[in-house]
Structure formats: structure tokens, C-alpha cells
Image (cartoon, rainbow, N blue to C red; front, side, top):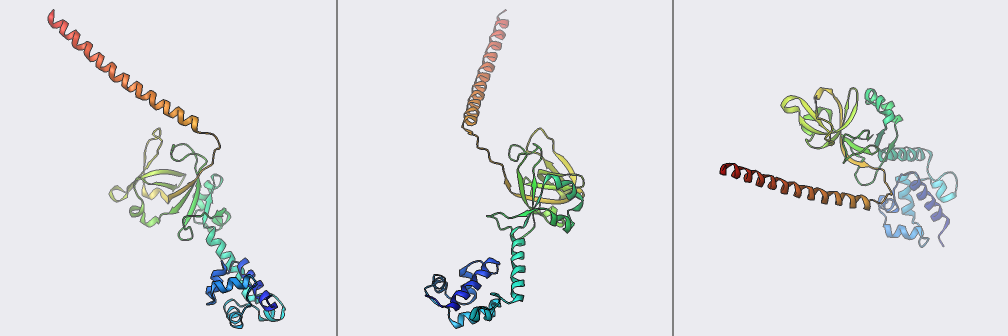
Length: 279
């Protein structure tokens, strides 16, 4: 059975955890030069806290001695609580580092992409996997079919910013970018000719659309595509695969028959030529 001081000290620890000041018991222990294994035993009510541990925590996190030893007031001093809240908000900002530009906001983005008030009003989110805390990221909705089959309407592209002063060096040919221009936002595969002639060629993966060459000065922003978020369909695609396989087989048969027809035609022409020579 642990004493009341230990129980109050654990309350202080939980407060710091809830406010985001610390991320785990392991971090808390390391911050206080205390063994994580020993701290685990304290949390399991198998050990009481030491005076030295309490003193270190009061100094490090501005915990309230009045609360720990007498049960008066709050777990942390008022200033510390304000700092904890601010720290928690900053951590949320760090986590929600991807600003989403939906279709409805794209027109406004063209003229206000540098306006912090406008950007703050857009929704932000985070994703696991890539460390999105470092750098500037945007998410753009895909509209149209110009980049099919790889990128389709309804998907969301998560992109990292390309330094606008270093486009000629940092934009990689044959990679896919979201390009923000004066009148539109497009997603295209890029050919970088800025060094040679000051232009960039915008190429659609869908062959129906022709490449377009633009001057580098027309570009306001470029965002390199890092990943895409796609809607999921529960439809069974096995029939589609069978259809595609059958189609491939049919193409092979047609190709083979075409070759046979060509050979037959050549043979007929030779025969006719020989007959003419006899006459």
C-alpha cells in the first residue's frame, strides 16, 4: 500500500501526460534521471516515491509542493499549467502539419496562398509514416482525368513544398507535381527545361491530353507529390482481372492472325507475280 504523497505525485504525472508535456512514463523517468523500471513499480503501487524524486520533479516541471505534500491547490503551479497548455497546443500544431486545400477553396488559394489568416482557416491534419513535422506540406484534391490511370478524380495528393527560388535545381523531370499558377492549380508530370530555356513542360499521363509548355515565371508554387489518399471500393475486382486477361488473350490472337494474313498476302502476291512472268 503506497502512501498519500505517492498517490498525489502520480496525479501530477497524469496531469503532465494529459496536457502533452510528456509523452510517456519512460520519458518522464529519463527527464528526472530515474529508472523507467522503478517508475513502473511506482505506477503499479509497488513502491513509494523518494524525496529526491519529488524534489527533481518539482524543479523540472514546476509541480506544486503544496498539492503533493498537503493536498492543497492544483497539481502544478499556475504558470506551469499555462506553459503545459501552450506546449500541448504547439504539439498539436506540429502534428497537424498538412494543410488541406479542397476544391471549394482552390480559387481563393490562387490569390491568398501567402495569407496566414486564409491558411489558418483551412483544415489541417497529420498522417503516420513520413515525418511531416519538418518542412511545409499541402494536400490537394484531384479533379479531372488528365493523370489517369495513376491518379484519379476524388483522390487527395499530399505534397511537400519546392523552394520557389530553386525550381531550376530542385524540380525533377519525370516526377509528378502540383503546380499553382495565376489562374489554376494542376497536377502534372514535369519536364524541367528552366536551365536551358526558362520553361517547364506539363505532361498528362492520359495520352488524350497534349503536353503544355509554360514559362517558369508563370509558376507561383510547386508541390512535389509524396503520397495519395484514395477512396476504397468494396467491389470484387476478380471479374475485372479475368476480363483484362481475356482481353490480353484476344489481342494476342488478333496479333497472331494479323501476322498470318500478312504472310498469306505476301504469298499470293508472289504467286501472281510468277504467273505474270510465265505469260
